[in-house]
Image 1 (spheres, helix red, strand yellow):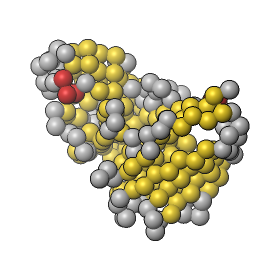
Image 2 (cartoon, chains in turn brown, blue):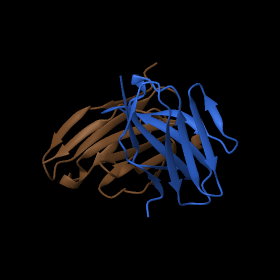
Image 3 (cartoon, one colour):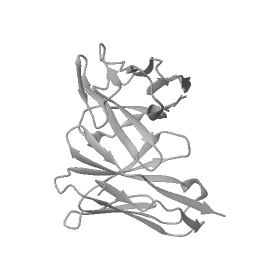
Image 4 (tube, one colour):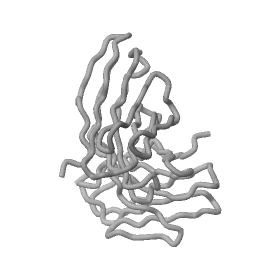
Amino acid sequence: NAGVTQTPKFQVLKTGQSMTLQCAQDMNHEYMSWYRQDPGMGLRLIHYSVGAGITDQGEVPNGYNVSRSTTEDFPLRLLSAAPSQTSVYFCASSYSGHANYGYTFGSGTRLTVV
Amino acid sequence: RKEVEQDPGPFNVPEGATVAFNCTYSNSASQSFFWYRQDCRKEPKLLMSVYSSGNEDGRFTAQLNRASQYISLLIRDSKLSDSATYLCVVNTGFQKLVFGTGTRLLVSP
C-alpha cells in the first residue's frame, strides 16, 4: 500500500519556468490538498479538493493551479516559477475533509527556484 | 498574531525525562485539535488527536483547554526516538487545518 506518492522528490527550476508536481494516492481518499512549508512559517494550504472535479483555493494560491480529474491524482502546477516559490511542498489526503480522520502526507518535493 | 503559536524550542532533555509542550490558538470557533510529529526532512505524521476530556496514548498525554484556547502535549519517559519537531494543528473549520511552526525536541543519552 503506497499511500501518498509525490514526484519528483527534488527539483531546481529557473525563474519563469513552469512545472507540475505530481501527487497520487491509492487509499480512495476523497479529500486531497497541497501545502508548502517554509522556515518559521509552518505549513500553509495552497489548494485543496473535496473530490474529483472539485477544487478550491487555500491560504496561498497565487502562482499555482490544480485540477482533479480522478480521485487518485491531484497535480500542482507552477505557472511561472519565482524564487519566492522555493519551498518544500507536501501533498496530503484524508478519507474526509473532516480532519478528525487525520491527514496522510506524501514525502514532499523540495523545490528550488534560481 | 499567528493563529497557532508554539514555542520553537529546542527543548533539550535527557532520556527518561518528562517534557511538556504548549500551544495556543486564536480562533475560538476552532473545532478539532491535533499533534503531528515531523522528523527532520520528512513529512508530518499524525501523533494524536486532542479531546476536551484529555487523552492518553502510551507515554503521550494531550490536554485541551477551550476556555484558555490552550493545548498541551506531555511526553513521559522520553526516548531517543522521540527527537523530532512536534506540530500543534487546529481545525478552524471544514477543510482548513492551521499548523503551528513546531516545537523541536532533542532527547540525549
